[in-house]
Image (cartoon, rainbow, N blue to C red; front, side, top):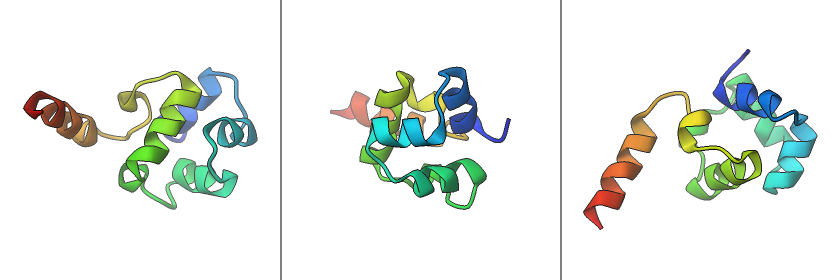
Length: 79
C-alpha cells in the first residue's frame, strides 16, 4: 500500500471519489496526497480534520510521521 492515508481509505472500503466527497475536498488533491505529489503533513489542519472525520480515524492513521500529532498533543496540553 502506498501510504497511510491510502491504506486507511482502502480499509474503510472507500474509493478516492467517495472519500473526497465525504470529506468535502477535491479528488485530485486527495490523489496528490496519496501519490506523494503533495506532502499531507503540510495540509491545512481543516483538511486533515475533514479527512479524519470522513474516515472515522485519528490523525496518526493518515499522517506519515508522528511529528504533527505530537505537536498537537503538546498544544492541547499547554492550553
